[in-house]
Length: 576
Image: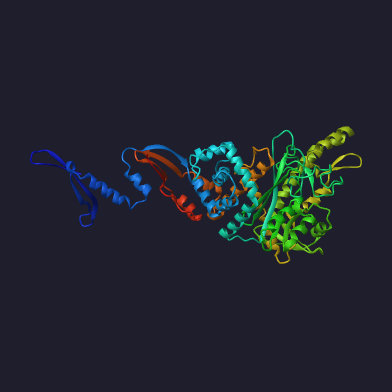
């Protein structure tokens, strides 16, 4: 805009479309007029509006509307957007949305079920809360496509969880094959382990008749022995148990009812599937159901890797069915002749990785036995044992001067401390002594663990390294309990608790996909994503949402996950 005076001295303003050009010779910028619109008081405003409309057709409609909105814009607020953006992108890449809609097709239900299930999973990953709080979180705290400003309540979430439990087998199978194709996973090893989660309730659930899968049996009344065969001898497949009941707790809370959760994981740490059982189910009772369920997926030969709780002959036979195999940890402190013979064999160790050394021993069995030795762990074991022995010597020092009753009380106190009890010996005369023979025997086990494998083709190194990757399952349990907050569980019914565990499995699946693709921990990636927000503005022409400018680390995360960057203007609602 320029101002000039006419002959009468009146100031007249002229409008021009201009831009600056750099003059390299003069080393300065010069203004170049592209078009002159003439005097401001004689301006053809209709022609300018037509010009602006023509230019706007070259832009994205939402962006054009935002740029041409007259008047002041009002900022209405913003919500975190990056976390749900990435999780929703992976959710769609795995086709979980399609599987859910296909499995639920033809049923009379809320059309938002798939979106609600995704929102519940995202809530576990980004800000774990109760289902009541999750409903308001999905609609008011973050932006989730399809749930924007929706009217959700806790009952909507509960009904969605009920549907999830019904379609879980098909959903797990489809997710498995989608992930293997997406990441080109190596499926020669499947790792399996269990954990438990407790409930702070006064009484366990009532005992009900259950089948070999831990499911409630619906049918005739039980006959009192729990097998349901009517003869009262307990020789059937059914057992009486409550779902939340007492058992051996892996959280050191044997005083509270619990449920048992099992998880199968690939060598890359991808959770394949989860299972839930009554809290008194032993590890050895679980492996046959897991193997049967995964056999239905028509997998090729798979080597199962499991911890020492699965070493029974029945479990090993179950794992061998269908051409499979196993790598299982053995208990060193065992009376098994095979274990004693393996530990007594002489031979040199071979270093395979870092400070891990292995030695294969032949004791005349069809299985292969591999002794693994870690020198650093041996030093730690020796230091811990020396400390325990010193504490025991201090505790029993002067006990010879006590009468028989007082020594018995002291022995009773020491028996409640497993670390000290292991090395305590009672003489025929009732005196308390350190069991030096036991100390020497334990020293022979420092830094060692024993593996049993059925596969004749794997090298000793592959067996040892494969078992060491069982830590991936333990990392999964740790993330479930610390990042996803598996506890507390705000549900009472068995089906809701099972569905609750499934939500954690889906959340852990998305986390592992992010970590494997980016090479970063989920906590670090989440910190970057939480800085991406979606702001809402309103003006005379309507309202629109605008995504914050992405930083390079944020773009790198999206690139690593092969996800597109979000549009600057994500939505536009014209004014009525």
